[in-house]
Image: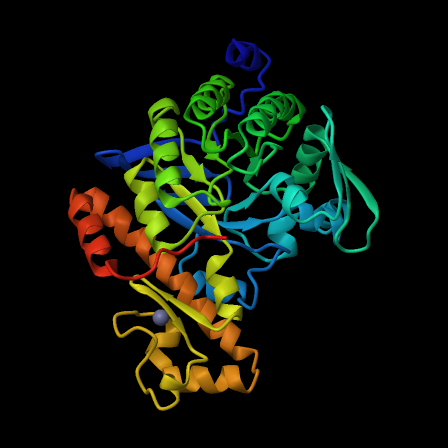
Length: 388
Ligand SMILES: [Zn+2]
């Protein structure tokens, strides 16, 4: 078994600095604590995305006020600009962006496949043209780990290939490549103060997901991610894949559902054993004038809000809802004032962070089934939302 080899070689990624304690379980839902060198993470947890070492339009102080614990930064973007060597020279990502709490970096894989101008995949890695200046660049499992070690996040991710969800042959090839690359990432990693998570792929195909979850679990990573979801498949397909993977991944390590984060995705994911979520949606929607609530979205451009003195959500305790009306937000948007993005981002991030906290509390109190039933009852009639 690879895991035995890796443990013998001290490469398994297990480290005293990273432990995961389950504090409560209800059905498949779990509440846990993941210890990292920059603080503890209470799960289930939603992580705001700071693509370019900034959660767009939000300061670290504001993130602290929102009680965000983990944020995500993107390897692809920081590798191209300003460059991981420069970030390392300037003291690493925590210091550079003044975020002393836990950080997760992705591997660059997803962005290479979705953003890079042209890309050529071979067994060793991916060659692509930068979306910024058209220069030719290359990422391999080894270089992705080297970049992530330079950036210095607490949780780093294996370099993987995310295929379109419905092509069975492509997904089989991408999964096999992802498995070979996961092993190479483990061998390349040297920093003991970072936890490397493996990624399960396999599209919407149950048999591929079973093979992938079993193989990735066998490598002895300290945490596991489920990739390749919310990329065009239906909610039902995503949920059934989560149920398959949940049965196979070890219970004593955190599970991270990558790039997924509508309110209903959080509840559905936790019901199927997921502990960590991240998504650009709250801040992206904010820049597109849209407010997220548990029951749906408000487009604040709408003329019906011109004289509406109510907050976005009467039940929300965020800074925006405590202080500003829908009418004022609509005015800021009409006047193209930057503050609209900040205020809407604060509200949207609060919506997901607070939902994750309430989910955790409900699991601990043993009433998560009722919580989930109430959540879906409140949403009935509202449209399905997607994360990307
Ligand atoms: Zn609010």
